[in-house]
Image 1 (spheres, rainbow, N blue to C red):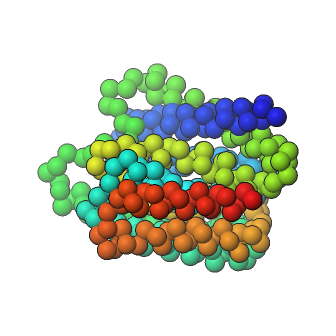
Image 2 (tube, one colour):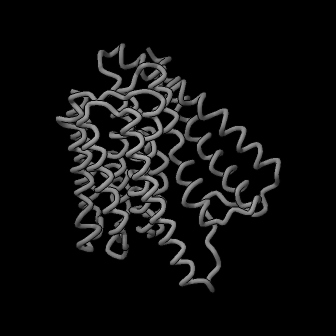
Amino acid sequence: MIMPWLMSGLGLVLLLLAGDALVKGAVNLSLRLGVPALIVSLTIVAFGTSAPELLISIQAIKDNAPGLALGNVVGSNTANILLVLGIPALLATMHTSECNTRKTYNFMILASLLFIGLAFRGVFDWIAGIVLLAGLALMLGDAFRDAHLHRRADKDEPEEEPEGADPDMPWWRIILFLVLGLIGLPLGASLLVENATIIAKTYGVSDTVIGLTLVAIGTSLPELATTVMAALRRQADVALGNVIGSNMFNLLAIIGIASFVGPIPVDPEFLRFDLWVMLGASVLLFPFVYLSWNITRFWGVVLSGLYLAYLVVVLI
């Protein structure tokens, strides 16, 4: 039984490396073609970092394991808050009292409520997909407007380069990154989904549970790495913004696009438990966003402990 675990791990590593390669290639291609860095940051980087989750969801639907697709998104959002913010806080206090993330946090809560409301229809179909993608368009439009106004107010300051930008990157490297990303993403998604499904059947658990745990934690690793580095560098705004932005994209973009590939039925257990845990984890951020609390080591223990307790409940 060790082979499915090894192949799942290989698929996950491929996904993470290919997603990073695709972002680097797409960012530098866009900048070479004259697309403003602002637009690149709000679109290509945001979508590119969500590419692994998107490919997993699409592959899961094609392999008739839609529970894995939905479990991955819901589980990733819960892990992003409890685990991705909890572990870095154990290493260093995150001074979130200095951040102004109220507007994006409000968007995340609204996106979560919209997602839960659509889930009670019993299935995420093309109708739900249109609603979710419309919400994504509104969010992106507002973010673009705010970023544009902010840049105009600080027009004397140099424009900040988006993540993955390298002005000196040669064309051959840009093309290589794009090719590696476009080949590695579907290959990694296929390996991970197929072997995660084998593991689920072997241990008698549903693909939904595997999506909520193994796949969700795996696809949250890039956010965890980014947040750990941000915490150590005392960049709490990066850490908190990374988590909030990732959660919004997971809900609106991943399931929004995947629902056009095929219907995603909602397991009743999601409606009874997992969706409310996801919403509860989101509400836990309220004092850090609105009351100027810092995420101290104490809160790191609380958040990490809550995530471990959630895993125990899901797996038992």
